[in-house]
Amino acid sequence: MSITKFIQRLLRIKAFSVRSFEFKNWYRELWLEVKPFKNGALCPHCLRRGRIIHTLDEPRVWRDVMICKRKVYFTYCPREIDCPVHGRVQEDIPWAAPHAQVTYRLEYAVLIHCTIMTQKAAGQLLKIAASTISDLLHRIITRERRGHRIRNLKMIGIDEISYCKGRKYATIVYDLQRSCVVWIGQGKARETIDRFFKEKLSQYQRNQIVSGCCDMSETFIGAIEKWCPNATLTLDRFHIVKALNDAVDEVRKEEWRKADRPGKKALKGLRWLIYRHSSNRSAEDTRTLKSLYMGNRRIHRSWVLKDEFEQFWEFSDIKLAEEFLDSWCKTAMKSRLESIKTFIRTIRRHKHRLLPFIENRLTNAAAEGLNRIIKIVKNRPVDFRIWMRFQTSFI
Ligand SMILES: [Zn+2]
Figure (cartoon, rainbow, N blue to C red):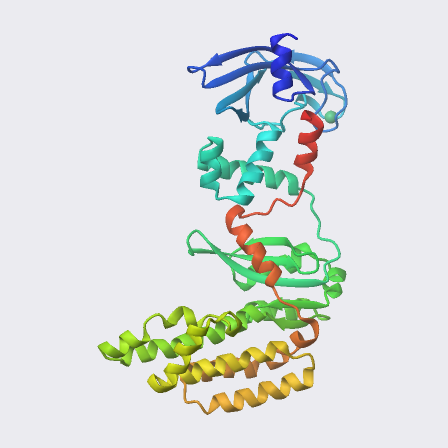
């Protein structure tokens, strides 16, 4: 076996051949001169064979995946061809996309690394600058998503997500049936979400949507009610629970401000306990809660109310759930806790949007999981076409 053939086997190169190799930069870089097999030069747009006009004088360079901590580069002088349809174009490169400076398999490695870690970590591991990683991701995803159409959208979920350390917002639209992201738009204003309904969906598609799920913001509620006439709107459970938790926390903060030094000491460490669901509470947490009954009645009261409200999500009969909600609101209204009262007013205003949950159990919960992934990648690579291309050209 010749040495070039050995390198070819080692790097699992099949669709083209290695002509020569060279180590550069104190053996830190392996430079390979490669050449596609003789099947004529193809047009990158239509993959038709064209007449070769001219070979570039300067070789182009592509970066490949690292091997044993050494960077691998491919060099090749591409030829220009005359395609009967597309005219004068540079030939199709079997190992990389047109105009790309990295190979398909490095693109794939970047995508995979970025789905499981931050872009910064991926950059360090693959020895690529973080800014290049972000450019690469953007280019790959735009290329793969070109011509992507939304199909058969019946359950829609809308949510907002912050990025750039909370300075900027994006609106995300989910397909809750398939648990995937269908659209991302910049900003969280009404124009953003209106643009989605106007540009991405036809009248027929908008009428096809049977249920929608979002938080309590008027923007999203208004948009769903305006654009999807056949949809039942359900408020997202996660956001309701959060609103109640925040209300209870508001009571705690108030008490904290009023308390003297020993009182503050007694209230310490309550914050994370308040946010915990009753089923996740340890015996010690329950003891702390009970001791509050003697210590601070107001916090204790709000806490008990919060625990009682958890039952609402367990109902399976819509009538019973409504009765429960009414009676809970009535009792809670007597509590003289201002933040809880504000929450009740919200609940009363949105009651008809809260009750459908009992029947359809619709939440953005699957979407919340997706949010975490989006936070890492910013855009979700849903296509595996790159993987296919990678497979066909290398393995
Ligand atoms: Zn062509």
